[in-house]
Length: 423
Image (tube, rainbow, N blue to C red; front, top):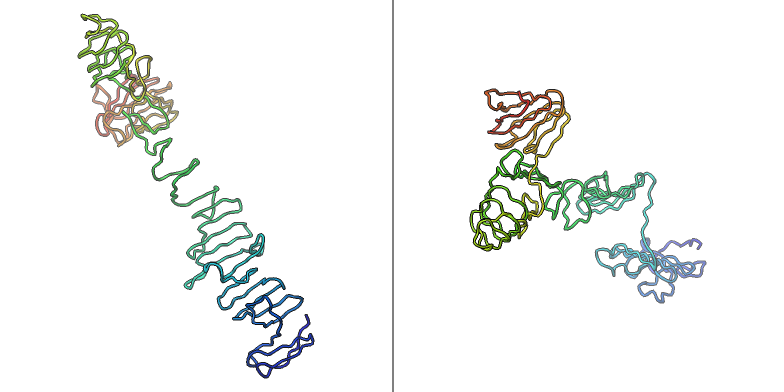
């Protein structure tokens, strides 16, 4: 479309016939008005009939209020609504949308979108500002490093980053894993394995954060432990032990050697050897001293407990042997300082000696030491009193080759050592 050489306007309503045959009318007071051509406006009810330009069916038209409309001959492709401050692309009435999201409306029949094209070493940005400050919230894509940043509260440091490897960082701009959070996470449920520290309660756990001791044996939940019962050296139950029970209810299977004091309720299958003090209710297969099998107070043996019980956490009904006690080993190949978890254990050491620390053990804690070598090793007392049993000697001790000793805590930071090969 060729340019039109309009004359100088002298009054509102002045007309001018262009070479195209279009009659233009000057609207407004010169020189602040404009020339407008009058065309048919059928189907364009929102127009006031004034065209700024028109060619081949396309037009730029003024709105009946204030603004512009670009029409492709069929539909309004762009609408600039200056009264309401709205822009419609493919939408003739952006003001009809939700008031929070109608400033720019893009409409089309297929996939639509906005492209921000930046330099290879630069970033594309969307800023969210308010009357108090610019850029309170920001979305930035950095083309040089191919990462997204999401900034909040006007901070120049990203609150969330998605890097080029698809790793997400929250509170960190250098995520090391698919989701790297620098801070505390609250969740109603997590379906996966977690690495690191978790604050709060879990339904189940594989390890206690703080190991506990059960009868002097350290326990953190990662493995089963066997506790000792009894007073003799092997910590088992034999003829030298006397065990008092408030009552045993159920079948008793297996042999019991020694004295058992308490009530035994249930069936006894087999022989009971020894004295039974108290009432025996039920039938016995045989009796050594009774008027009848049903009223016996002394029976030879019993083979099974009517109700299985647990001994130190191990199920026991008397039908098979179980291990009630043992002395776990802590093997060391260099100088070693005892820890609380060693109570109830024996240390097998090849070189470097043993150190007894201050403020660790309580009265009754005992540790055995085995010199698993052909050379002498020193047992060092650090800020504690170490007495040689049966003497007035105190201080560091020597454990000869293949020597075996036991260290017993008898008072706060006071120990007694005895054994074979101790000097």
